[in-house]
Length: 460
Image (cartoon, rainbow, N blue to C red; front, side):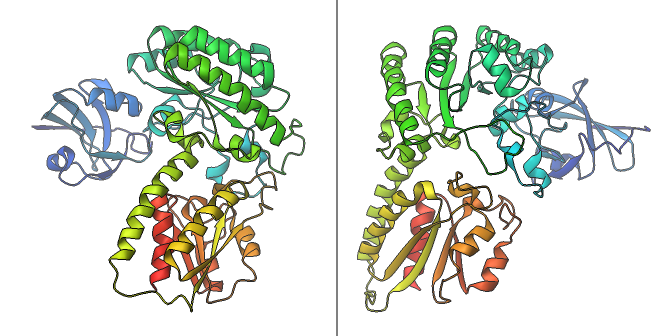
């Protein structure tokens, strides 16, 4: 049912504007189109994605739109509980994301070159993105009303950048005089039974050692069982730190010390809470040059996107995919000519070089007709302290493969390209590489994507 009214509603504001309508959805059947503006649902104004998600859960809806002619249209909808309407908004949150006003001593966005894309320098600190996109929030850019909304809408789990429970040290690390006081918000979330994931960016001689151990004790003693996981990641330090707080990278010995001491907490937590609770990012183990924990030690991989357990997942999946690859090869009638091997240069970050080299040797032995030259890309763009694959840049890649022959296939992991565009962090286009080299292959970051890329090259 639809009713229509005249209005002078301002359509210049992009908030609530419909960018697209999903085909065969409820909204498509109603005749809603791109450019409509959502005003209210069941009499409640829509200010952001939380209002929208909460209100559309009902079975009966009265929805108010402004159409393309500037008229108000009201639709009455009966549907199944929680069914989506199929609306896609101009902005993910409907509202604008909340900006971060901290000047954290470890913030990587403060360590970028002068000329980078705007999307790289925008710092969000938005609890809505914490829920929908997995971003971490410091709590410093929030009010009590924001905490009340989290509780009202049951936004759980919420991801919190904690770093330390020492209020004075936290204020210093975040360069925010309120960074210690706002820890009281965690008490409110705990009392409301909102689950939380905790992140600690570890900075040498600041929040490590005894400060870290006290933080782990504080969190586990006060907030269990509402803490789902605690993740510790080493600070990333680029070469662009002029006029910034002096930070030193964690060395091999530092990482080993963290691993030994955190493992003691894991054993204690396992006994007390039936979970390891605290996890270290893979970089600690790779830097310390010791084995990554087994797959089962990561339990349900609560912070995989934070680099926690990615190697263990890759290892587990690699074993399964190798079995499938061997079966696939066994079924092939044609035998590969091992006298005329195909040459591949496979690029990776320095931190994972040894690991990837080990895996490619297995693929060489199975496939028989390929030579894989694994090369790590020295990160001159951000600085040699940055060793992860995801921050490899186009110009550094070009420098790494400058001696490559045109018959060689260059394999680049997709993680170093922009998600929705074939462009590197330094604005070099993938096409720039392809114009210089005949064979450039982008492999998916997944284990299957990695193996499939090599296998497909071997078949050519």
